[in-house]
Amino acid sequence: MMDNRDLLRIENVDKHFGGVHAVAGFSAQVGPGQTVGLIGPNGSGKTTVFNLVTGIIPVDDGSVRFLGTDITSWKPHAIVRAGVGRTFQNIRLFHGLDVIDNVKAALCGGESYGFAAALLRTPRARRVERQLTEKARDLLEQVDMLHLAEERPQNLPYGLQRRLEMARALATSPRLLLLDEPAAGLNPSEVVAIVDLICRVRDRVGLAIFLIEHHMDVVMPICDEVYVLNMGRTIAHGTPREVQNDPAVLRAYLGE
Amino acid sequence: MSYYMDLATLVGIQVIAVVGVFAISGLTGLMSLGQGGFMAIGAYTAVLTNMRLGVPWPLAILLGMVAVCIVSPIVGYPSLRLRRDFFAIATFGFGEAVTALGRMFTQVTGGTMGLAGIPRFTNVWIVLFAVGATIFMTANLKNSRLGRNSLAIRSDELSAEAAGIDVFGHKMKVFVYGASLAGLAGGLQAFFIHYMDPMIFNVWTSVEQVVLVYFGGINSLTGCVVSTLLLSALPEAFRFARLWRVVIYSVFVVVILNLRPQGLLGDYELSLASIRGALSNCCRSRRKRYTESTGLE
Image (cartoon, rainbow over all chains, first blue to last red):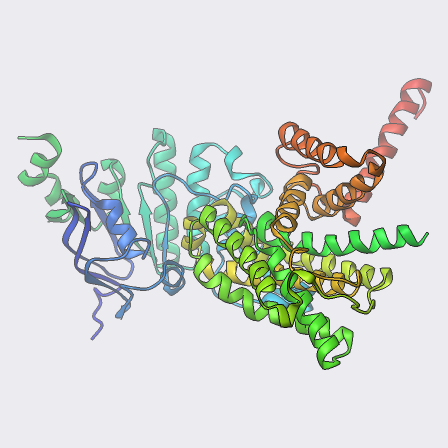
Protein backbone atom coordinates (compact mmCIF):
# COMPACT_ATOMS: atom_id res chain seq x y z
CA MET A 1 0.00 0.00 0.00
CA MET A 2 3.01 2.25 0.54
CA ASP A 3 4.49 3.36 -2.73
CA ASN A 4 7.65 5.33 -3.16
CA ARG A 5 5.94 8.72 -2.91
CA ASP A 6 4.45 8.03 0.50
CA LEU A 7 6.81 9.35 3.13
CA LEU A 8 4.42 12.18 3.91
CA ARG A 9 0.97 12.29 2.34
CA ILE A 10 -1.29 15.22 3.14
CA GLU A 11 -4.83 14.74 1.86
CA ASN A 12 -7.49 17.46 1.60
CA VAL A 13 -6.51 19.13 4.83
CA ASP A 14 -8.83 21.92 5.93
CA LYS A 15 -8.50 24.53 8.66
CA HIS A 16 -10.73 27.43 9.66
CA PHE A 17 -9.85 30.14 12.17
CA GLY A 18 -13.20 31.73 12.91
CA GLY A 19 -14.39 33.04 9.55
CA VAL A 20 -10.98 32.71 7.89
CA HIS A 21 -10.45 29.67 5.71
CA ALA A 22 -6.73 29.43 6.44
CA VAL A 23 -6.09 26.16 4.60
CA ALA A 24 -8.58 24.88 2.05
CA GLY A 25 -8.29 21.29 0.91
CA PHE A 26 -4.50 21.21 0.79
CA SER A 27 -2.92 18.03 -0.54
CA ALA A 28 0.75 17.25 -1.00
CA GLN A 29 3.20 14.37 -1.02
CA VAL A 30 6.83 14.16 -0.08
CA GLY A 31 8.78 11.08 -1.07
CA PRO A 32 11.91 9.68 0.56
CA GLY A 33 14.96 11.84 -0.06
CA GLN A 34 12.89 14.44 -1.88
CA THR A 35 13.06 18.18 -1.26
CA VAL A 36 9.71 19.88 -1.67
CA GLY A 37 9.10 23.62 -1.39
CA LEU A 38 6.00 25.40 -0.16
CA ILE A 39 5.80 29.02 -1.28
CA GLY A 40 3.19 31.73 -1.39
CA PRO A 41 2.55 35.33 -0.38
CA ASN A 42 2.40 36.32 3.30
CA GLY A 43 -0.67 35.02 5.07
CA SER A 44 -1.34 32.33 2.47
CA GLY A 45 -1.36 29.54 5.10
CA LYS A 46 2.09 28.02 4.71
CA THR A 47 3.02 27.93 8.39
CA THR A 48 -0.49 26.75 9.21
CA VAL A 49 0.14 23.73 6.96
CA PHE A 50 3.29 22.96 8.98
CA ASN A 51 1.43 23.38 12.26
CA LEU A 52 -1.26 21.00 11.03
CA VAL A 53 1.27 18.39 9.93
CA THR A 54 3.18 18.56 13.23
CA GLY A 55 0.01 18.40 15.33
CA ILE A 56 0.47 21.79 16.97
CA ILE A 57 -3.01 22.82 15.83
CA PRO A 58 -5.75 20.26 15.19
CA VAL A 59 -6.92 19.53 11.65
CA ASP A 60 -10.59 20.36 10.92
CA ASP A 61 -10.88 17.91 8.06
CA GLY A 62 -8.65 15.69 5.93
CA SER A 63 -5.75 13.49 6.92
CA VAL A 64 -1.98 13.45 7.32
CA ARG A 65 -0.18 10.15 6.81
CA PHE A 66 3.46 9.54 7.56
CA LEU A 67 5.10 6.28 6.42
CA GLY A 68 1.60 4.97 5.75
CA THR A 69 0.38 5.66 9.31
CA ASP A 70 -2.40 8.14 9.98
CA ILE A 71 -0.86 10.74 12.32
CA THR A 72 -3.68 13.29 12.01
CA SER A 73 -4.70 13.44 15.67
CA TRP A 74 -1.35 12.57 17.24
CA LYS A 75 0.31 14.68 19.91
CA PRO A 76 3.15 16.90 18.60
CA HIS A 77 5.90 15.08 20.49
CA ALA A 78 4.68 11.70 19.21
CA ILE A 79 4.81 12.99 15.63
CA VAL A 80 8.36 14.20 16.23
CA ARG A 81 9.36 10.83 17.61
CA ALA A 82 7.77 9.11 14.62
CA GLY A 83 10.34 10.94 12.48
CA VAL A 84 9.05 14.40 11.56
CA GLY A 85 11.43 17.13 12.76
CA ARG A 86 10.84 20.83 12.35
CA THR A 87 12.30 24.31 12.80
CA PHE A 88 10.39 27.53 13.42
CA GLN A 89 10.14 30.71 11.40
CA ASN A 90 10.84 32.84 14.46
CA ILE A 91 13.71 30.92 16.03
CA ARG A 92 12.65 29.18 19.23
CA LEU A 93 15.69 27.91 21.08
CA PHE A 94 15.81 27.04 24.78
CA HIS A 95 17.29 30.17 26.36
CA GLY A 96 17.63 28.49 29.74
CA LEU A 97 20.02 25.85 28.35
CA ASP A 98 23.45 26.19 26.77
CA VAL A 99 24.08 25.26 23.16
CA ILE A 100 24.97 21.61 23.69
CA ASP A 101 22.06 21.04 26.07
CA ASN A 102 19.71 22.49 23.46
CA VAL A 103 20.75 19.61 21.23
CA LYS A 104 20.82 17.01 24.03
CA ALA A 105 17.27 17.90 25.07
CA ALA A 106 16.09 16.96 21.60
CA LEU A 107 17.97 13.67 21.20
CA CYS A 108 15.37 10.98 20.65
CA GLY A 109 15.77 7.33 19.98
CA GLY A 110 18.50 5.12 21.31
CA GLU A 111 18.83 4.23 24.95
CA SER A 112 17.20 6.29 27.65
CA TYR A 113 16.59 6.14 31.39
CA GLY A 114 13.66 6.77 33.68
CA PHE A 115 12.79 9.04 36.55
CA ALA A 116 14.03 6.76 39.32
CA ALA A 117 17.34 6.18 37.54
CA ALA A 118 17.73 9.96 37.20
CA LEU A 119 17.06 10.57 40.91
CA LEU A 120 19.60 7.95 41.97
CA ARG A 121 22.06 8.69 39.15
CA THR A 122 22.53 5.02 38.41
CA PRO A 123 25.49 3.76 36.33
CA ARG A 124 23.08 3.27 33.44
CA ALA A 125 21.95 6.91 33.67
CA ARG A 126 25.58 8.05 33.66
CA ARG A 127 26.43 5.87 30.68
CA VAL A 128 23.43 7.12 28.67
CA GLU A 129 24.33 10.74 29.55
CA ARG A 130 27.84 10.18 28.16
CA GLN A 131 26.37 8.73 24.96
CA LEU A 132 24.01 11.70 24.62
CA THR A 133 26.91 14.12 25.03
CA GLU A 134 28.84 12.24 22.33
CA LYS A 135 25.91 12.37 19.92
CA ALA A 136 25.26 16.05 20.63
CA ARG A 137 28.91 16.91 20.00
CA ASP A 138 28.69 15.01 16.72
CA LEU A 139 25.69 17.05 15.61
CA LEU A 140 27.31 20.33 16.64
CA GLU A 141 30.37 19.31 14.64
CA GLN A 142 28.14 18.79 11.59
CA VAL A 143 26.93 22.40 11.80
CA ASP A 144 30.42 23.72 12.70
CA MET A 145 29.38 24.89 16.15
CA LEU A 146 31.29 22.57 18.44
CA HIS A 147 33.49 25.40 19.74
CA LEU A 148 30.33 27.20 20.95
CA ALA A 149 28.97 24.26 22.97
CA GLU A 150 29.00 26.10 26.30
CA GLU A 151 27.47 29.37 25.04
CA ARG A 152 23.91 30.46 25.64
CA PRO A 153 21.95 30.48 22.35
CA GLN A 154 20.58 34.00 22.86
CA ASN A 155 24.14 35.36 22.79
CA LEU A 156 24.84 33.95 19.32
CA PRO A 157 24.43 35.83 16.04
CA TYR A 158 21.24 35.16 14.15
CA GLY A 159 22.82 32.94 11.50
CA LEU A 160 24.28 30.62 14.13
CA GLN A 161 20.96 30.46 15.97
CA ARG A 162 19.40 29.20 12.72
CA ARG A 163 22.13 26.56 12.46
CA LEU A 164 21.62 25.50 16.05
CA GLU A 165 17.90 25.14 15.49
CA MET A 166 18.72 22.92 12.56
CA ALA A 167 21.06 20.80 14.70
CA ARG A 168 18.32 20.50 17.32
CA ALA A 169 15.82 19.36 14.70
CA LEU A 170 18.35 16.80 13.42
CA ALA A 171 18.80 15.53 16.99
CA THR A 172 15.27 14.12 16.88
CA SER A 173 16.58 11.73 14.14
CA PRO A 174 13.96 12.73 11.58
CA ARG A 175 13.16 10.98 8.32
CA LEU A 176 11.48 14.17 7.19
CA LEU A 177 12.50 17.69 8.15
CA LEU A 178 10.10 20.63 7.97
CA LEU A 179 12.01 23.89 7.63
CA ASP A 180 10.00 27.08 8.11
CA GLU A 181 11.87 29.86 6.28
CA PRO A 182 15.39 28.69 7.15
CA ALA A 183 16.91 31.71 5.38
CA ALA A 184 14.67 34.40 6.86
CA GLY A 185 16.64 37.34 8.21
CA LEU A 186 19.99 36.04 6.97
CA ASN A 187 22.47 38.05 4.95
CA PRO A 188 23.49 36.81 1.46
CA SER A 189 26.60 34.95 2.61
CA GLU A 190 24.68 33.29 5.45
CA VAL A 191 22.01 32.25 2.92
CA VAL A 192 24.65 30.51 0.84
CA ALA A 193 25.97 28.79 3.96
CA ILE A 194 22.55 27.56 5.07
CA VAL A 195 21.70 26.22 1.60
CA ASP A 196 25.00 24.40 1.64
CA LEU A 197 24.23 23.00 5.08
CA ILE A 198 20.74 21.87 4.06
CA CYS A 199 22.15 20.05 1.04
CA ARG A 200 24.89 18.45 3.11
CA VAL A 201 22.64 16.97 5.79
CA ARG A 202 20.05 15.95 3.21
CA ASP A 203 22.57 14.03 1.17
CA ARG A 204 24.36 12.50 4.13
CA VAL A 205 21.37 10.84 5.76
CA GLY A 206 18.97 10.68 2.81
CA LEU A 207 16.64 13.05 4.59
CA ALA A 208 13.46 14.29 2.95
CA ILE A 209 12.85 18.02 3.30
CA PHE A 210 9.66 20.04 3.14
CA LEU A 211 10.44 23.73 3.26
CA ILE A 212 8.74 27.09 3.32
CA GLU A 213 10.84 29.80 1.76
CA HIS A 214 10.61 33.23 0.19
CA HIS A 215 14.17 33.41 -1.12
CA MET A 216 14.01 32.11 -4.69
CA ASP A 217 17.78 31.55 -4.56
CA VAL A 218 17.10 28.93 -1.91
CA VAL A 219 14.07 27.31 -3.53
CA MET A 220 15.40 27.14 -7.10
CA PRO A 221 18.58 25.13 -6.57
CA ILE A 222 17.43 22.64 -3.93
CA CYS A 223 13.74 21.88 -4.50
CA ASP A 224 12.62 19.00 -6.68
CA GLU A 225 9.03 20.18 -6.56
CA VAL A 226 7.16 23.26 -5.39
CA TYR A 227 3.62 23.85 -4.17
CA VAL A 228 2.30 27.40 -4.36
CA LEU A 229 -0.34 28.49 -1.87
CA ASN A 230 -2.52 31.58 -2.04
CA MET A 231 -5.35 32.34 0.39
CA GLY A 232 -5.15 28.78 1.69
CA ARG A 233 -5.52 27.20 -1.77
CA THR A 234 -2.95 25.46 -3.93
CA ILE A 235 -2.68 27.54 -7.08
CA ALA A 236 0.24 25.74 -8.70
CA HIS A 237 2.38 22.63 -8.36
CA GLY A 238 5.39 21.54 -10.35
CA THR A 239 9.13 21.89 -10.74
CA PRO A 240 10.55 25.25 -9.60
CA ARG A 241 11.01 26.32 -13.23
CA GLU A 242 7.42 25.47 -14.23
CA VAL A 243 6.02 27.25 -11.21
CA GLN A 244 8.12 30.35 -11.72
CA ASN A 245 6.51 31.04 -15.10
CA ASP A 246 2.98 30.07 -14.10
CA PRO A 247 0.60 33.01 -14.75
CA ALA A 248 -1.48 32.25 -11.62
CA VAL A 249 1.65 32.44 -9.47
CA LEU A 250 2.76 35.71 -10.99
CA ARG A 251 -0.72 37.11 -10.43
CA ALA A 252 -0.70 36.07 -6.77
CA TYR A 253 2.69 37.60 -6.10
CA LEU A 254 2.54 40.71 -8.24
CA GLY A 255 -1.18 41.43 -8.49
CA GLU A 256 -3.18 41.83 -11.70
CA MET B 1 20.30 23.70 73.18
CA SER B 2 17.09 21.85 72.64
CA TYR B 3 15.52 25.07 71.34
CA TYR B 4 18.12 25.21 68.58
CA MET B 5 17.66 21.50 67.87
CA ASP B 6 13.94 22.08 67.50
CA LEU B 7 14.53 25.08 65.27
CA ALA B 8 16.93 23.05 63.13
CA THR B 9 14.33 20.28 62.82
CA LEU B 10 11.60 22.65 61.69
CA VAL B 11 13.90 24.44 59.26
CA GLY B 12 15.04 21.06 57.89
CA ILE B 13 11.43 20.04 57.31
CA GLN B 14 10.87 23.31 55.49
CA VAL B 15 13.95 22.65 53.33
CA ILE B 16 12.44 19.32 52.18
CA ALA B 17 9.20 21.01 51.16
CA VAL B 18 11.00 23.91 49.45
CA VAL B 19 13.24 21.53 47.47
CA GLY B 20 10.01 19.94 46.20
CA VAL B 21 8.79 23.37 45.10
CA PHE B 22 12.19 23.97 43.46
CA ALA B 23 11.61 20.99 41.18
CA ILE B 24 8.11 22.17 40.22
CA SER B 25 8.39 25.97 40.21
CA GLY B 26 12.13 26.51 39.81
CA LEU B 27 13.14 23.93 37.22
CA THR B 28 9.87 23.45 35.37
CA GLY B 29 8.40 26.93 35.87
CA LEU B 30 5.01 25.78 37.18
CA MET B 31 3.66 27.94 39.99
CA SER B 32 2.09 25.39 42.32
CA LEU B 33 0.16 27.00 45.16
CA GLY B 34 -1.21 23.69 46.44
CA GLN B 35 1.87 22.34 48.18
CA GLY B 36 0.29 23.05 51.57
CA GLY B 37 -2.56 20.75 50.57
CA PHE B 38 -0.11 17.93 49.82
CA MET B 39 1.65 18.52 53.15
CA ALA B 40 -1.74 18.20 54.85
CA ILE B 41 -2.55 14.95 53.02
CA GLY B 42 0.86 13.51 53.93
CA ALA B 43 0.51 14.64 57.52
CA TYR B 44 -3.05 13.41 58.10
CA THR B 45 -2.43 10.07 56.41
CA ALA B 46 0.68 9.51 58.51
CA VAL B 47 -0.90 10.55 61.81
CA LEU B 48 -4.21 8.76 61.31
CA THR B 49 -2.69 5.47 60.15
CA ASN B 50 -0.32 5.63 63.09
CA MET B 51 -2.78 6.63 65.83
CA ARG B 52 -5.92 4.83 64.64
CA LEU B 53 -4.45 1.78 62.91
CA GLY B 54 -1.21 1.39 64.83
CA VAL B 55 1.01 1.51 61.73
CA PRO B 56 4.65 2.09 62.78
CA TRP B 57 5.65 5.71 62.16
CA PRO B 58 8.24 5.28 59.37
CA LEU B 59 5.71 3.24 57.42
CA ALA B 60 3.01 5.77 58.27
CA ILE B 61 5.08 8.61 56.77
CA LEU B 62 5.67 6.46 53.71
CA LEU B 63 1.92 5.84 53.44
CA GLY B 64 1.42 9.60 53.59
CA MET B 65 3.73 9.96 50.59
CA VAL B 66 1.88 7.17 48.78
CA ALA B 67 -1.42 8.98 49.42
CA VAL B 68 0.09 12.14 47.89
CA CYS B 69 1.29 10.12 44.89
CA ILE B 70 -2.31 8.96 44.38
CA VAL B 71 -3.94 12.37 44.82
CA SER B 72 -1.41 14.55 42.93
CA PRO B 73 -2.00 12.96 39.49
CA ILE B 74 -5.73 13.54 39.99
CA VAL B 75 -4.99 17.22 40.67
CA GLY B 76 -2.41 17.40 37.88
CA TYR B 77 -4.41 15.65 35.16
CA PRO B 78 -6.80 18.54 34.49
CA SER B 79 -4.67 21.42 35.82
CA LEU B 80 -1.38 20.69 34.04
CA ARG B 81 -3.13 21.10 30.69
CA LEU B 82 -4.00 24.68 31.57
CA ARG B 83 -1.98 27.79 30.93
CA ARG B 84 0.59 28.44 33.64
CA ASP B 85 -1.33 31.21 35.40
CA PHE B 86 -4.48 29.10 35.47
CA PHE B 87 -2.45 26.20 36.85
CA ALA B 88 -1.46 28.43 39.77
CA ILE B 89 -5.12 29.26 40.41
CA ALA B 90 -6.23 25.62 40.11
CA THR B 91 -3.62 24.39 42.59
CA PHE B 92 -4.47 27.29 44.91
CA GLY B 93 -8.09 26.06 44.82
CA PHE B 94 -6.93 22.53 45.59
CA GLY B 95 -5.01 23.70 48.67
CA GLU B 96 -8.03 25.59 49.94
CA ALA B 97 -10.27 22.59 49.26
CA VAL B 98 -8.05 20.34 51.37
CA THR B 99 -8.25 22.80 54.28
CA ALA B 100 -12.03 23.04 53.92
CA LEU B 101 -12.44 19.26 53.79
CA GLY B 102 -10.22 18.91 56.84
CA ARG B 103 -12.50 21.23 58.76
CA MET B 104 -15.65 19.50 57.56
CA PHE B 105 -14.78 15.88 58.41
CA THR B 106 -14.61 16.53 62.12
CA GLN B 107 -14.75 12.85 63.18
CA VAL B 108 -11.65 12.01 61.18
CA THR B 109 -9.52 15.13 61.45
CA GLY B 110 -10.80 16.72 64.61
CA GLY B 111 -11.99 19.67 62.53
CA THR B 112 -10.99 23.10 63.78
CA MET B 113 -10.38 21.56 67.21
CA GLY B 114 -7.44 19.76 65.67
CA LEU B 115 -5.75 16.53 66.67
CA ALA B 116 -3.84 16.68 69.92
CA GLY B 117 -1.53 14.20 71.61
CA ILE B 118 0.28 13.10 68.47
CA PRO B 119 3.37 11.17 69.54
CA ARG B 120 6.75 12.70 68.69
CA PHE B 121 8.96 10.47 66.56
CA THR B 122 10.72 13.02 64.40
CA ASN B 123 14.06 14.29 65.63
CA VAL B 124 16.81 16.37 64.16
CA TRP B 125 18.86 13.37 62.93
CA ILE B 126 15.98 11.81 61.05
CA VAL B 127 15.24 15.15 59.45
CA LEU B 128 18.89 15.71 58.53
CA PHE B 129 18.97 12.31 56.86
CA ALA B 130 15.77 13.11 54.94
CA VAL B 131 17.13 16.52 53.92
CA GLY B 132 20.34 14.89 52.64
CA ALA B 133 18.45 12.30 50.62
CA THR B 134 16.10 14.93 49.21
CA ILE B 135 18.90 17.25 48.13
CA PHE B 136 20.91 14.36 46.66
CA MET B 137 18.00 13.15 44.54
CA THR B 138 16.92 16.61 43.42
CA ALA B 139 20.48 17.59 42.46
CA ASN B 140 20.67 14.41 40.39
CA LEU B 141 17.33 15.24 38.83
CA LYS B 142 18.52 18.70 37.86
CA ASN B 143 21.66 17.31 36.20
CA SER B 144 19.85 14.55 34.33
CA ARG B 145 17.92 14.23 31.11
CA LEU B 146 14.79 15.12 33.08
CA GLY B 147 16.25 18.34 34.47
CA ARG B 148 17.15 19.32 30.93
CA ASN B 149 13.60 18.60 29.80
CA SER B 150 12.28 20.71 32.68
CA LEU B 151 14.40 23.69 31.69
CA ALA B 152 13.46 23.23 28.04
CA ILE B 153 9.78 23.26 28.96
CA ARG B 154 10.27 26.34 31.13
CA SER B 155 12.05 28.10 28.24
CA ASP B 156 9.56 27.27 25.50
CA GLU B 157 6.82 24.65 25.67
CA LEU B 158 5.99 24.57 21.97
CA SER B 159 9.62 24.17 21.11
CA ALA B 160 9.97 21.42 23.71
CA GLU B 161 7.17 19.51 21.96
CA ALA B 162 9.00 20.02 18.67
CA ALA B 163 12.09 18.54 20.32
CA GLY B 164 10.10 15.37 21.00
CA ILE B 165 9.55 16.01 24.71
CA ASP B 166 6.23 14.81 26.13
CA VAL B 167 5.50 18.10 27.88
CA PHE B 168 2.36 17.02 29.73
CA GLY B 169 3.83 13.68 30.83
CA HIS B 170 7.01 15.32 32.03
CA LYS B 171 5.19 18.03 33.98
CA MET B 172 3.12 15.29 35.62
CA LYS B 173 6.22 13.38 36.78
CA VAL B 174 7.83 16.48 38.26
CA PHE B 175 4.58 17.56 39.86
CA VAL B 176 4.11 14.19 41.57
CA TYR B 177 7.76 14.19 42.68
CA GLY B 178 7.53 17.66 44.22
CA ALA B 179 4.18 16.87 45.82
CA SER B 180 5.50 13.68 47.39
CA LEU B 181 8.32 15.70 48.99
CA ALA B 182 5.64 17.99 50.43
CA GLY B 183 3.92 14.84 51.73
CA LEU B 184 7.18 13.73 53.37
CA ALA B 185 7.63 17.15 54.98
CA GLY B 186 4.03 17.06 56.21
CA GLY B 187 4.47 13.63 57.79
CA LEU B 188 7.72 14.60 59.51
CA GLN B 189 6.17 17.79 60.83
CA ALA B 190 3.07 16.05 62.16
CA PHE B 191 5.18 13.66 64.22
CA PHE B 192 7.13 16.57 65.60
CA ILE B 193 4.76 19.26 66.86
CA HIS B 194 2.30 17.02 68.82
CA TYR B 195 -0.68 18.87 67.44
CA MET B 196 -2.28 19.38 64.07
CA ASP B 197 -5.30 21.14 62.61
CA PRO B 198 -6.29 21.77 58.99
CA MET B 199 -5.27 25.43 59.18
CA ILE B 200 -1.59 24.66 59.76
CA PHE B 201 -1.08 23.84 56.10
CA ASN B 202 -2.85 26.79 54.54
CA VAL B 203 -2.21 28.79 51.41
CA TRP B 204 0.52 30.84 53.12
CA THR B 205 2.52 27.68 53.61
CA SER B 206 2.46 27.20 49.84
CA VAL B 207 3.08 30.85 49.02
CA GLU B 208 6.03 31.10 51.39
CA GLN B 209 7.66 28.06 49.79
CA VAL B 210 7.34 29.56 46.33
CA VAL B 211 8.75 32.86 47.61
CA LEU B 212 11.73 31.01 49.09
CA VAL B 213 12.49 29.37 45.74
CA TYR B 214 12.31 32.69 43.86
CA PHE B 215 14.33 34.37 46.60
CA GLY B 216 17.15 31.84 46.31
CA GLY B 217 17.08 31.85 42.50
CA ILE B 218 14.94 29.57 40.36
CA ASN B 219 18.00 28.03 38.69
CA SER B 220 19.81 27.20 41.90
CA LEU B 221 19.06 24.31 44.22
CA THR B 222 21.78 25.64 46.52
CA GLY B 223 20.02 29.01 46.44
CA CYS B 224 16.69 27.63 47.58
CA VAL B 225 18.31 25.72 50.44
CA VAL B 226 20.29 28.81 51.52
CA SER B 227 17.24 31.07 51.29
CA THR B 228 15.23 28.63 53.43
CA LEU B 229 17.94 28.48 56.07
CA LEU B 230 18.26 32.26 56.01
CA LEU B 231 14.63 33.31 55.91
CA SER B 232 13.34 30.63 58.27
CA ALA B 233 15.95 31.56 60.84
CA LEU B 234 15.51 35.29 60.27
CA PRO B 235 12.10 35.62 61.93
CA GLU B 236 13.58 33.80 64.93
CA ALA B 237 16.53 36.19 65.07
CA PHE B 238 14.12 39.12 65.12
CA ARG B 239 11.92 37.54 67.75
CA PHE B 240 12.58 40.52 70.07
CA ALA B 241 10.81 42.72 67.54
CA ARG B 242 7.73 40.53 67.49
CA LEU B 243 5.34 42.78 65.64
CA TRP B 244 7.91 43.81 63.06
CA ARG B 245 9.08 40.34 62.13
CA VAL B 246 6.74 39.99 59.19
CA VAL B 247 7.58 43.47 57.96
CA ILE B 248 11.33 42.87 58.12
CA TYR B 249 10.90 39.54 56.36
CA SER B 250 8.79 41.10 53.61
CA VAL B 251 11.15 44.01 53.09
CA PHE B 252 14.03 41.56 52.78
CA VAL B 253 12.18 39.61 50.09
CA VAL B 254 11.09 42.70 48.16
CA VAL B 255 14.59 44.15 48.20
CA ILE B 256 16.16 40.95 46.85
CA LEU B 257 13.53 40.43 44.17
CA ASN B 258 14.03 44.02 42.97
CA LEU B 259 17.78 44.27 43.14
CA ARG B 260 18.54 40.70 42.07
CA PRO B 261 15.71 39.37 39.92
CA GLN B 262 17.68 36.20 39.22
CA GLY B 263 17.49 35.45 42.96
CA LEU B 264 20.11 35.44 45.67
CA LEU B 265 22.43 32.91 44.04
CA GLY B 266 21.33 33.11 40.40
CA ASP B 267 22.80 30.11 38.55
CA TYR B 268 25.36 29.20 41.20
CA GLU B 269 25.44 25.63 42.51
CA LEU B 270 27.62 24.45 45.35
CA SER B 271 29.67 21.46 44.21
CA LEU B 272 33.14 20.03 44.58
CA ALA B 273 34.13 21.56 41.26
CA SER B 274 32.90 25.02 42.22
CA ILE B 275 34.73 24.90 45.58
CA ARG B 276 37.94 23.80 43.86
CA GLY B 277 37.49 26.62 41.33
CA ALA B 278 37.05 29.23 44.06
CA LEU B 279 40.08 27.94 45.96
CA SER B 280 42.37 27.98 42.95
CA ASN B 281 41.19 31.51 42.07
CA CYS B 282 41.98 32.60 45.58
CA CYS B 283 45.47 31.06 45.46
CA ARG B 284 46.18 32.60 42.08
CA SER B 285 45.27 36.11 43.19
CA ARG B 286 47.37 35.73 46.31
CA ARG B 287 50.34 34.56 44.29
CA LYS B 288 49.81 37.49 41.91
CA ARG B 289 49.79 39.95 44.79
CA TYR B 290 52.96 38.38 46.13
CA THR B 291 54.66 38.61 42.72
CA GLU B 292 53.62 42.21 42.32
CA SER B 293 54.77 43.34 45.74
CA THR B 294 58.11 41.53 45.74
CA GLY B 295 58.93 41.32 42.07
CA LEU B 296 59.76 37.64 42.63
CA GLU B 297 58.08 34.60 41.03
